[in-house]
Image (cartoon, rainbow, N blue to C red; front, side, top):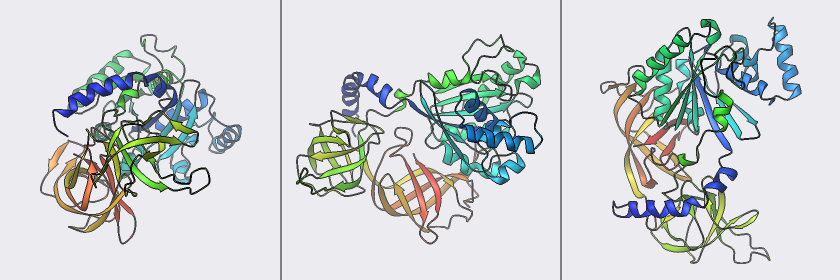
Amino acid sequence: MTNEVRPLWRIENDKVTSNISEKMQIDNNQLLRFTTAGSVDDGKSTLIGRLLYDSKAIFEDQLEAVETTSKRKGHDGVDLALFTDGLRDEREQGITIDVAYRYFTTPKRKFIIADTPGHIQYTRNMVTGASTANAALILIDARNGVIEQTKRHAFIASLLQIPHIIVCVNKMDLVDYKEEVYENIIAQFEEFSSKLYVKDIRFLPISALNGDNVVNRSENMGWYQGAPLLHTLEHMHISSDLNKIDARFPVQTVLRPQSKEFVDYRGYAGRVASGIFRPGDDVTIMPSGFTSVIKSVDTIEGPMDEAYAPMSVSITLEDDIDISRGDMIVKTNNKPTPTQEFDAMLCWLNNSAARPRAKYTILHTSNEQKAMIKDILYKIDINTYSRDEENKDLNMNDIARIKIRTTRPLMIDEYRDNRITGSFVLIDDASHETVAAGMIL
Protein backbone atom coordinates (compact mmCIF):
# COMPACT_ATOMS: atom_id res chain seq x y z
CA MET A 1 0.00 0.00 0.00
CA THR A 2 1.44 3.37 -0.99
CA ASN A 3 1.87 6.30 1.34
CA GLU A 4 -0.49 8.39 -0.82
CA VAL A 5 -3.41 5.97 -0.45
CA ARG A 6 -3.29 5.30 3.27
CA PRO A 7 -4.12 8.82 4.59
CA LEU A 8 -7.09 9.08 2.20
CA TRP A 9 -8.31 5.69 3.32
CA ARG A 10 -7.88 6.58 6.98
CA ILE A 11 -10.00 9.72 6.53
CA GLU A 12 -12.64 7.76 4.64
CA ASN A 13 -12.79 5.14 7.37
CA ASP A 14 -13.05 7.74 10.09
CA LYS A 15 -16.18 8.97 8.36
CA VAL A 16 -17.78 5.62 7.66
CA THR A 17 -17.03 4.07 11.04
CA SER A 18 -18.45 6.88 13.12
CA ASN A 19 -22.04 5.78 12.49
CA ILE A 20 -21.37 2.16 13.49
CA SER A 21 -19.39 2.79 16.67
CA GLU A 22 -22.49 2.50 18.84
CA LYS A 23 -23.55 -0.75 17.17
CA MET A 24 -20.07 -2.21 17.61
CA GLN A 25 -20.14 -1.28 21.28
CA ILE A 26 -23.44 -3.10 21.74
CA ASP A 27 -22.96 -6.10 19.46
CA ASN A 28 -19.24 -6.75 19.64
CA ASN A 29 -17.42 -5.04 22.46
CA GLN A 30 -19.47 -6.49 25.27
CA LEU A 31 -16.97 -9.35 25.12
CA LEU A 32 -13.61 -8.67 26.76
CA ARG A 33 -10.84 -11.25 26.91
CA PHE A 34 -8.24 -10.82 29.59
CA THR A 35 -5.38 -12.88 30.93
CA THR A 36 -3.68 -13.03 34.30
CA ALA A 37 0.08 -13.12 34.78
CA GLY A 38 2.45 -12.99 37.70
CA SER A 39 4.92 -14.98 39.72
CA VAL A 40 4.07 -18.18 41.55
CA ASP A 41 1.85 -17.57 44.63
CA ASP A 42 1.11 -13.97 43.67
CA GLY A 43 -2.59 -14.87 43.86
CA LYS A 44 -3.70 -15.09 40.22
CA SER A 45 -6.13 -17.97 40.70
CA THR A 46 -7.37 -16.50 43.97
CA LEU A 47 -8.10 -13.19 42.22
CA ILE A 48 -10.11 -14.91 39.48
CA GLY A 49 -11.92 -16.96 42.11
CA ARG A 50 -12.77 -13.78 44.00
CA LEU A 51 -14.07 -12.12 40.83
CA LEU A 52 -16.30 -15.10 40.09
CA TYR A 53 -17.41 -15.54 43.70
CA ASP A 54 -18.25 -11.91 44.49
CA SER A 55 -19.94 -11.30 41.13
CA LYS A 56 -22.20 -14.35 41.75
CA ALA A 57 -20.85 -16.15 38.66
CA ILE A 58 -20.42 -19.54 40.34
CA PHE A 59 -22.91 -22.38 39.86
CA GLU A 60 -24.20 -24.04 43.03
CA ASP A 61 -22.70 -27.44 42.19
CA GLN A 62 -19.31 -25.82 41.52
CA LEU A 63 -19.49 -23.97 44.82
CA GLU A 64 -20.43 -27.12 46.71
CA ALA A 65 -17.56 -29.07 45.14
CA VAL A 66 -15.01 -26.36 45.99
CA GLU A 67 -16.36 -26.03 49.55
CA THR A 68 -16.01 -29.80 50.01
CA THR A 69 -12.44 -29.78 48.66
CA SER A 70 -11.55 -26.78 50.83
CA LYS A 71 -12.78 -28.55 53.98
CA ARG A 72 -10.89 -31.71 53.06
CA LYS A 73 -7.70 -29.64 52.73
CA GLY A 74 -8.29 -28.11 56.14
CA HIS A 75 -9.13 -24.53 55.08
CA ASP A 76 -11.38 -22.44 57.29
CA GLY A 77 -13.24 -20.88 54.35
CA VAL A 78 -13.54 -21.40 50.61
CA ASP A 79 -10.22 -21.80 48.75
CA LEU A 80 -10.98 -19.41 45.87
CA ALA A 81 -8.08 -20.67 43.76
CA LEU A 82 -9.84 -24.02 43.29
CA PHE A 83 -12.37 -22.38 40.97
CA THR A 84 -9.67 -22.20 38.27
CA ASP A 85 -7.06 -24.79 39.27
CA GLY A 86 -8.71 -27.78 37.64
CA LEU A 87 -5.82 -30.22 37.26
CA ARG A 88 -5.07 -32.65 40.09
CA ASP A 89 -1.43 -31.52 40.26
CA GLU A 90 -2.56 -27.91 40.44
CA ARG A 91 -4.81 -28.58 43.41
CA GLU A 92 -2.21 -30.68 45.20
CA GLN A 93 0.63 -28.17 44.71
CA GLY A 94 -1.47 -25.00 44.87
CA ILE A 95 -0.08 -23.73 41.56
CA THR A 96 -1.34 -23.15 38.02
CA ILE A 97 0.19 -25.38 35.33
CA ASP A 98 -2.09 -25.27 32.32
CA VAL A 99 -4.07 -22.32 30.96
CA ALA A 100 -7.52 -22.30 32.58
CA TYR A 101 -10.30 -20.54 30.71
CA ARG A 102 -13.30 -19.24 32.62
CA TYR A 103 -16.38 -17.42 31.39
CA PHE A 104 -18.68 -15.08 33.25
CA THR A 105 -21.11 -12.29 32.52
CA THR A 106 -22.17 -9.11 34.25
CA PRO A 107 -24.96 -6.73 33.16
CA LYS A 108 -22.30 -4.55 31.51
CA ARG A 109 -20.08 -7.04 29.69
CA LYS A 110 -19.17 -10.65 28.91
CA PHE A 111 -15.72 -11.92 29.90
CA ILE A 112 -13.37 -14.72 28.92
CA ILE A 113 -10.55 -15.18 31.42
CA ALA A 114 -7.28 -17.00 30.72
CA ASP A 115 -5.60 -17.90 34.02
CA THR A 116 -1.98 -18.54 32.99
CA PRO A 117 0.85 -20.15 34.99
CA GLY A 118 3.64 -18.17 36.64
CA HIS A 119 6.52 -20.66 36.45
CA ILE A 120 9.37 -19.91 34.06
CA GLN A 121 8.98 -23.31 32.36
CA TYR A 122 5.38 -22.48 31.42
CA THR A 123 6.16 -19.31 29.43
CA ARG A 124 4.63 -20.97 26.35
CA ASN A 125 1.34 -21.41 28.23
CA MET A 126 1.23 -17.69 28.97
CA VAL A 127 1.85 -16.89 25.30
CA THR A 128 -1.04 -19.18 24.38
CA GLY A 129 -3.44 -17.60 26.88
CA ALA A 130 -2.44 -14.01 26.12
CA SER A 131 -2.43 -14.19 22.32
CA THR A 132 -6.08 -13.12 21.96
CA ALA A 133 -6.40 -10.98 25.09
CA ASN A 134 -7.65 -7.40 25.13
CA ALA A 135 -6.12 -6.82 28.55
CA ALA A 136 -3.54 -8.38 30.86
CA LEU A 137 -3.71 -8.42 34.66
CA ILE A 138 -0.16 -8.54 36.01
CA LEU A 139 -0.12 -9.39 39.71
CA ILE A 140 2.63 -8.22 42.04
CA ASP A 141 3.05 -9.38 45.63
CA ALA A 142 3.07 -6.18 47.69
CA ARG A 143 5.73 -7.71 49.98
CA ASN A 144 8.16 -8.50 47.14
CA GLY A 145 7.62 -5.64 44.71
CA VAL A 146 8.73 -5.88 41.08
CA ILE A 147 10.77 -9.04 40.47
CA GLU A 148 12.25 -10.72 37.38
CA GLN A 149 9.06 -12.66 36.69
CA THR A 150 7.11 -9.41 36.67
CA LYS A 151 9.43 -7.98 34.01
CA ARG A 152 9.21 -11.22 32.04
CA HIS A 153 5.43 -11.18 31.91
CA ALA A 154 5.31 -7.46 31.12
CA PHE A 155 7.69 -8.07 28.22
CA ILE A 156 5.57 -10.92 26.86
CA ALA A 157 2.43 -8.75 27.15
CA SER A 158 4.25 -6.04 25.21
CA LEU A 159 5.52 -8.54 22.64
CA LEU A 160 1.97 -9.81 22.08
CA GLN A 161 0.73 -6.22 21.69
CA ILE A 162 -1.89 -6.53 24.43
CA PRO A 163 -3.42 -3.03 24.38
CA HIS A 164 -4.21 -2.69 28.10
CA ILE A 165 -2.26 -3.74 31.18
CA ILE A 166 -3.66 -3.54 34.71
CA VAL A 167 -0.96 -3.92 37.34
CA CYS A 168 -2.66 -5.38 40.43
CA VAL A 169 -0.59 -4.89 43.58
CA ASN A 170 -1.95 -7.85 45.55
CA LYS A 171 -1.75 -8.90 49.21
CA MET A 172 -2.02 -5.32 50.44
CA ASP A 173 -3.47 -6.77 53.65
CA LEU A 174 -0.04 -8.26 54.43
CA VAL A 175 1.61 -4.81 54.33
CA ASP A 176 -1.10 -3.14 56.45
CA TYR A 177 -2.61 -1.46 53.36
CA LYS A 178 0.21 1.12 53.33
CA GLU A 179 0.02 3.65 50.51
CA GLU A 180 3.79 4.16 50.39
CA VAL A 181 4.32 0.46 49.57
CA TYR A 182 1.90 0.78 46.65
CA GLU A 183 3.53 4.00 45.39
CA ASN A 184 7.01 2.44 45.53
CA ILE A 185 5.87 -0.50 43.40
CA ILE A 186 4.35 1.88 40.84
CA ALA A 187 7.69 3.69 40.60
CA GLN A 188 9.57 0.39 40.17
CA PHE A 189 7.23 -0.79 37.42
CA GLU A 190 7.25 2.51 35.51
CA GLU A 191 11.05 2.57 35.56
CA PHE A 192 11.40 -0.49 33.35
CA SER A 193 8.06 -0.39 31.50
CA SER A 194 9.11 2.82 29.71
CA LYS A 195 11.12 0.50 27.41
CA LEU A 196 8.02 -1.49 26.46
CA TYR A 197 5.44 -0.79 23.78
CA VAL A 198 2.19 -0.66 25.74
CA LYS A 199 -0.60 1.81 25.07
CA ASP A 200 -2.37 1.78 28.42
CA ILE A 201 -1.02 0.84 31.88
CA ARG A 202 -3.15 1.17 35.02
CA PHE A 203 -2.40 0.39 38.66
CA LEU A 204 -4.68 -1.01 41.34
CA PRO A 205 -4.06 -1.97 45.01
CA ILE A 206 -6.01 -5.10 45.96
CA SER A 207 -6.31 -7.99 48.36
CA ALA A 208 -7.71 -10.90 46.37
CA LEU A 209 -8.09 -13.06 49.48
CA ASN A 210 -10.20 -10.48 51.36
CA GLY A 211 -11.87 -8.95 48.30
CA ASP A 212 -10.44 -5.42 48.69
CA ASN A 213 -10.93 -3.44 45.42
CA VAL A 214 -11.81 -6.56 43.43
CA VAL A 215 -15.57 -6.31 42.98
CA ASN A 216 -16.28 -3.84 45.78
CA ARG A 217 -14.32 -0.79 46.95
CA SER A 218 -11.99 -1.36 49.87
CA GLU A 219 -12.79 0.19 53.23
CA ASN A 220 -9.19 -0.43 54.26
CA MET A 221 -7.64 1.77 51.55
CA GLY A 222 -9.45 5.08 51.75
CA TRP A 223 -6.42 6.75 50.20
CA TYR A 224 -7.13 5.00 46.87
CA GLN A 225 -9.80 6.93 44.96
CA GLY A 226 -9.94 4.78 41.83
CA ALA A 227 -12.54 2.20 40.82
CA PRO A 228 -12.33 -1.49 41.81
CA LEU A 229 -11.12 -4.06 39.32
CA LEU A 230 -14.48 -5.29 38.03
CA HIS A 231 -15.67 -1.74 37.34
CA THR A 232 -12.42 -1.05 35.48
CA LEU A 233 -12.87 -4.14 33.30
CA GLU A 234 -16.53 -3.39 32.64
CA HIS A 235 -15.85 0.15 31.45
CA MET A 236 -12.55 -0.38 29.61
CA HIS A 237 -12.81 1.08 26.11
CA ILE A 238 -11.64 -1.52 23.59
CA SER A 239 -13.47 -0.62 20.36
CA SER A 240 -10.53 1.55 19.25
CA ASP A 241 -8.23 -1.48 19.62
CA LEU A 242 -9.82 -3.04 16.53
CA ASN A 243 -8.21 -2.34 13.17
CA LYS A 244 -11.00 -0.68 11.18
CA ILE A 245 -8.70 0.54 8.42
CA ASP A 246 -7.17 -2.53 6.77
CA ALA A 247 -10.07 -4.61 5.45
CA ARG A 248 -9.08 -8.29 5.48
CA PHE A 249 -11.38 -11.28 4.96
CA PRO A 250 -9.63 -14.69 4.89
CA VAL A 251 -11.85 -17.19 3.08
CA GLN A 252 -12.48 -20.37 5.06
CA THR A 253 -14.84 -22.21 2.72
CA VAL A 254 -17.13 -21.76 -0.28
CA LEU A 255 -20.88 -22.14 0.32
CA ARG A 256 -22.92 -23.78 -2.48
CA PRO A 257 -26.29 -24.82 -0.92
CA GLN A 258 -27.86 -25.79 -4.32
CA SER A 259 -31.31 -25.72 -2.74
CA LYS A 260 -34.51 -24.33 -4.25
CA GLU A 261 -34.14 -21.06 -2.34
CA PHE A 262 -30.43 -20.67 -3.26
CA VAL A 263 -30.06 -22.25 -6.68
CA ASP A 264 -27.14 -20.12 -7.89
CA TYR A 265 -25.81 -19.01 -4.51
CA ARG A 266 -22.01 -18.92 -4.20
CA GLY A 267 -20.84 -17.39 -0.95
CA TYR A 268 -17.37 -17.11 0.50
CA ALA A 269 -17.55 -17.78 4.23
CA GLY A 270 -15.11 -16.77 6.95
CA ARG A 271 -14.46 -14.36 9.79
CA VAL A 272 -13.62 -10.72 9.21
CA ALA A 273 -10.07 -10.20 10.46
CA SER A 274 -10.19 -6.40 10.33
CA GLY A 275 -11.82 -3.48 8.57
CA ILE A 276 -15.38 -3.12 7.27
CA PHE A 277 -17.08 -4.72 4.27
CA ARG A 278 -20.30 -3.45 2.64
CA PRO A 279 -22.31 -4.33 -0.46
CA GLY A 280 -21.01 -2.23 -3.34
CA ASP A 281 -17.39 -2.14 -2.13
CA ASP A 282 -14.67 -2.68 -4.71
CA VAL A 283 -12.59 -5.66 -3.63
CA THR A 284 -9.56 -7.61 -4.81
CA ILE A 285 -9.00 -11.32 -4.29
CA MET A 286 -5.50 -12.16 -3.15
CA PRO A 287 -3.18 -13.60 -4.31
CA SER A 288 -4.78 -13.86 -7.78
CA GLY A 289 -5.36 -10.12 -8.05
CA PHE A 290 -8.80 -10.41 -9.68
CA THR A 291 -11.22 -7.61 -8.81
CA SER A 292 -14.97 -7.53 -8.25
CA VAL A 293 -17.72 -5.80 -6.27
CA ILE A 294 -19.43 -7.14 -3.15
CA LYS A 295 -22.97 -8.19 -4.02
CA SER A 296 -24.17 -9.07 -0.51
CA VAL A 297 -23.01 -9.74 3.04
CA ASP A 298 -25.01 -12.58 4.58
CA THR A 299 -25.38 -14.23 7.97
CA ILE A 300 -27.68 -16.94 9.27
CA GLU A 301 -30.10 -14.17 10.31
CA GLY A 302 -30.16 -12.72 6.79
CA PRO A 303 -28.42 -10.01 4.73
CA MET A 304 -26.35 -7.36 6.54
CA ASP A 305 -25.58 -3.77 5.62
CA GLU A 306 -21.99 -4.19 6.77
CA ALA A 307 -19.58 -6.68 8.35
CA TYR A 308 -16.72 -5.90 10.70
CA ALA A 309 -14.31 -7.82 12.92
CA PRO A 310 -14.81 -10.36 14.39
CA MET A 311 -18.10 -11.19 12.64
CA SER A 312 -18.49 -14.50 10.78
CA VAL A 313 -20.27 -13.89 7.48
CA SER A 314 -20.66 -15.05 3.89
CA ILE A 315 -19.74 -12.61 1.12
CA THR A 316 -21.07 -12.90 -2.43
CA LEU A 317 -19.53 -11.10 -5.43
CA GLU A 318 -20.93 -9.69 -8.65
CA ASP A 319 -18.48 -11.75 -10.73
CA ASP A 320 -17.74 -15.48 -10.87
CA ILE A 321 -14.14 -15.80 -9.71
CA ASP A 322 -12.21 -18.91 -8.71
CA ILE A 323 -11.83 -18.43 -4.94
CA SER A 324 -10.99 -21.13 -2.41
CA ARG A 325 -9.89 -21.60 1.18
CA GLY A 326 -6.70 -19.66 1.91
CA ASP A 327 -7.52 -16.77 -0.43
CA MET A 328 -8.20 -13.34 1.04
CA ILE A 329 -10.75 -10.69 0.05
CA VAL A 330 -9.45 -7.15 0.60
CA LYS A 331 -10.37 -3.61 -0.42
CA THR A 332 -8.93 -2.70 -3.81
CA ASN A 333 -7.37 0.53 -2.52
CA ASN A 334 -5.83 -1.15 0.54
CA LYS A 335 -4.05 -4.38 -0.31
CA PRO A 336 -1.44 -6.34 1.66
CA THR A 337 1.82 -7.18 -0.09
CA PRO A 338 2.13 -10.90 -0.92
CA THR A 339 5.36 -12.03 0.73
CA GLN A 340 7.34 -15.25 0.78
CA GLU A 341 10.13 -14.16 3.12
CA PHE A 342 9.74 -12.10 6.29
CA ASP A 343 11.04 -11.57 9.83
CA ALA A 344 9.06 -12.58 12.90
CA MET A 345 9.34 -12.92 16.66
CA LEU A 346 8.91 -16.61 17.42
CA CYS A 347 8.04 -18.35 20.68
CA TRP A 348 9.11 -22.00 20.59
CA LEU A 349 6.40 -24.16 22.21
CA ASN A 350 7.66 -27.70 21.74
CA ASN A 351 9.76 -29.96 23.95
CA SER A 352 11.99 -30.80 20.99
CA ALA A 353 14.37 -28.11 19.76
CA ALA A 354 14.01 -26.48 16.36
CA ARG A 355 15.84 -28.30 13.57
CA PRO A 356 18.10 -26.14 11.37
CA ARG A 357 16.46 -25.39 8.00
CA ALA A 358 13.78 -28.03 8.64
CA LYS A 359 10.48 -27.92 6.77
CA TYR A 360 7.33 -27.00 8.71
CA THR A 361 3.72 -26.30 7.86
CA ILE A 362 2.77 -22.68 8.49
CA LEU A 363 -0.84 -21.79 9.32
CA HIS A 364 -1.61 -18.14 8.60
CA THR A 365 -5.31 -17.19 8.87
CA SER A 366 -6.99 -19.87 6.72
CA ASN A 367 -3.90 -20.33 4.55
CA GLU A 368 -1.69 -23.38 4.88
CA GLN A 369 1.75 -23.54 3.27
CA LYS A 370 5.14 -25.18 3.70
CA ALA A 371 7.78 -23.05 5.37
CA MET A 372 11.36 -23.12 6.55
CA ILE A 373 13.13 -21.22 9.31
CA LYS A 374 15.82 -19.69 7.13
CA ASP A 375 17.81 -18.01 9.88
CA ILE A 376 17.73 -17.29 13.62
CA LEU A 377 18.88 -13.69 13.95
CA TYR A 378 18.99 -13.53 17.75
CA LYS A 379 17.33 -14.80 20.90
CA ILE A 380 15.79 -12.59 23.58
CA ASP A 381 16.76 -12.88 27.24
CA ILE A 382 13.37 -12.03 28.71
CA ASN A 383 14.92 -11.36 32.10
CA THR A 384 17.17 -8.55 30.87
CA TYR A 385 15.63 -7.82 27.41
CA SER A 386 19.13 -8.28 25.94
CA ARG A 387 19.84 -9.97 22.59
CA ASP A 388 21.87 -13.16 22.29
CA GLU A 389 23.30 -13.39 18.77
CA GLU A 390 25.67 -16.28 19.55
CA ASN A 391 23.35 -19.04 20.78
CA LYS A 392 21.11 -20.00 17.86
CA ASP A 393 19.48 -23.06 19.44
CA LEU A 394 15.70 -22.73 19.82
CA ASN A 395 14.39 -24.71 22.77
CA MET A 396 11.06 -24.75 24.58
CA ASN A 397 9.96 -21.30 25.86
CA ASP A 398 12.70 -19.49 23.90
CA ILE A 399 11.74 -16.28 22.13
CA ALA A 400 13.77 -15.29 19.08
CA ARG A 401 13.74 -13.11 16.00
CA ILE A 402 13.84 -15.37 12.97
CA LYS A 403 13.70 -15.14 9.18
CA ILE A 404 11.17 -17.45 7.60
CA ARG A 405 10.51 -18.42 4.00
CA THR A 406 7.35 -19.99 2.58
CA THR A 407 6.76 -21.98 -0.61
CA ARG A 408 4.06 -19.57 -1.80
CA PRO A 409 3.28 -15.94 -0.91
CA LEU A 410 1.24 -15.09 2.18
CA MET A 411 -0.95 -11.97 2.55
CA ILE A 412 0.55 -10.59 5.72
CA ASP A 413 0.42 -7.43 7.82
CA GLU A 414 2.68 -6.42 10.66
CA TYR A 415 1.51 -7.85 13.97
CA ARG A 416 1.43 -4.39 15.57
CA ASP A 417 -1.12 -3.33 12.91
CA ASN A 418 -3.18 -6.51 12.76
CA ARG A 419 -2.96 -9.31 15.32
CA ILE A 420 -4.89 -11.71 13.04
CA THR A 421 -3.06 -11.34 9.71
CA GLY A 422 0.21 -10.65 11.54
CA SER A 423 0.37 -13.96 13.43
CA PHE A 424 0.96 -17.59 12.53
CA VAL A 425 1.77 -21.00 13.99
CA LEU A 426 4.22 -23.67 12.82
CA ILE A 427 3.30 -27.37 12.67
CA ASP A 428 5.84 -30.20 12.67
CA ASP A 429 5.09 -32.34 9.62
CA ALA A 430 6.35 -35.51 11.29
CA SER A 431 4.58 -35.32 14.67
CA HIS A 432 1.75 -32.92 13.64
CA GLU A 433 2.40 -30.95 16.84
CA THR A 434 2.17 -27.17 17.06
CA VAL A 435 5.80 -26.24 17.67
CA ALA A 436 5.87 -22.43 17.53
CA ALA A 437 3.80 -19.26 17.49
CA GLY A 438 5.01 -16.24 15.54
CA MET A 439 4.38 -12.50 15.31
CA ILE A 440 5.32 -10.87 12.01
CA LEU A 441 7.56 -7.79 12.09
